[in-house]
Amino acid sequence: MTKIALVLGGGVSLGAYTGGAVSEILQALTNNKLQSGGSQTRIHVITGTSAGALNAALAARCLAVNQELLPWIQSAWVDAADAAHLLNPNRSNRSAWLDASAIDELTRALVTADPATDDSYSSAAGDPLRVGVTLANLRGVRYDIPYGFLNVPNRSFGTRLHDDSLVVELTRSARAGDPIWETLRQGALASSAFPFAFPIRSLTRSAADYPGATLPGMDDDLTMWYADGGLFDTAPLGLAKRMVERDPEFRSDDWRYVLVEPTLRSSSRNGSMSITDAPRATLDLAADLTRAVLGQGAAQDWVRAHRVNARLEILSALVERLPELNDRLHDPEEVGLGRRIGELAERVSEMQVALDPDLAARAGGGADAADVYLDEHLRRIESDNRYSGALAEADSRPGRSRLAKLIFLLESASGVCGKDILKLYLVAPATSGELMGDFLGNFGGFLNREWRANDFRAGRRDARRLLEESLSDIVSYDPSGDEDYQVNEFDPTWESIPMSARRQLTSALEAEVDQTLSKLRPGGLAGAFKWAWKPALKRWMVDRATRAIQEAR
Image 1: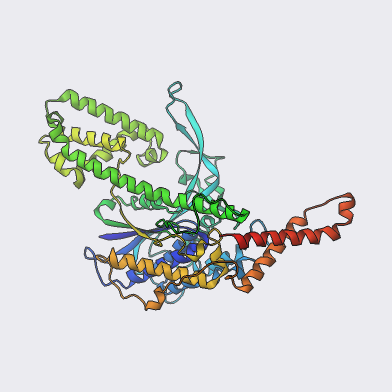
Image 2: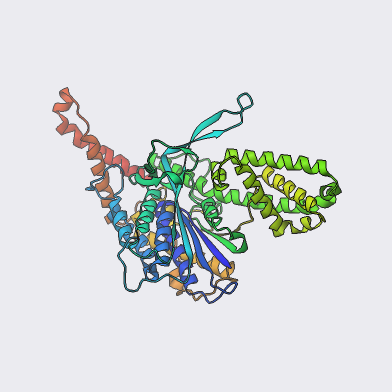
């Protein structure tokens, strides 16, 4: 059976692009004319980060509750995600620059809405449908990990892990009104809490979600604080893979990983930015830092997956040659060789379990966790089609066992133990600078509805290209009219921002400056004449900030 894992990247206002791609993919699978392995291709896993987490929650709602909500993904990004709502100078929560209440209201209306008469589980949704969002845990979770120092080999080193996630499992019973939707909504909001732009969020987490961690107190429920998940992982491919592997029979299915990532694109030699250009203004520096964080986060899982795929191909080629390289490997009389390989495999298994609390937990914990871990991998290796040819060369049980343990050692040494070659597909712009949401460090799209609509159509266009050119063996559908895929060229500048948005931005800047100046309490002569210098200072600060935006890329 063919199953899809949908991986949705972040990018602040570039969420419009991701939303367009998600809409096209959901429409295609809902109206799919093909069947694979006797059943329809379905989405079984969705992961998202930052803006991608919001899209993941919206996609899950369309799939598991009501597919008639699909057009609302476009409305959410093109109409609702606008500066008119986000730049609220009168907002009550002033801990960040943008008004989060607009996003709160939108997600309540779409993700946790009341049941409707036409609610139904989509034919494009797997059962269960697993949805995960990445999070940046601000305080971090403490683990004591044995690092194997030569002078103190038993010394554990305390470290805090800030890369976190939240996963929910939806079934046909998770109808509208089920509390699981509020859990998903809160997780998506926390994942999209971009630092300084939106307020940080708190979530109640279970201690059971952190096996092996050193947690404060004895309570099962803990309140933790989170910011944008894209700070560490803006293309959560690794999270998707872990969620796929929750199914014990995942290797029997044809898994396709589809990554929608607006910040991962081909290089453009003629782009407006050069690697040697210095930031021209403070806002330029902020925009460059945003691109650096999002770009690095987008690349890490993707690059890691391609490296693992390459290592697995090399390993498979090596394993095929093992029997002919040394006849002793499958000779049943070579008891000493078999014992040495077995002892080394046991030692490696002990090290793997000791270094990874998750492995120990999955192996049941306890003193025999390493033995359980090794036995599981040996069974997997002996049933793996990639190694069947080499194992068939061993005509005795001791020979096959010895060869399986040697394969386990080779996998462990190359860092691919238990890993599989992933079928990876990418939906992304072809070149840099094509999306309007790139402007102002990925925040510019909020300032112009036409820019967001254009990016939404670009997402649909690129997803359609993938479906028709690379996934035609499992998907066949009738796309919409050509106007839904028409992408125009814009030159995003201050002058091209609508006047209403510019006024809104100026009002927001004035409110922020007023907030800053209200905290100044000068004494003496400066305090006596504040009526004179405060208005002048306010005008200077607002003009300086406006000029920085005008000069930004």
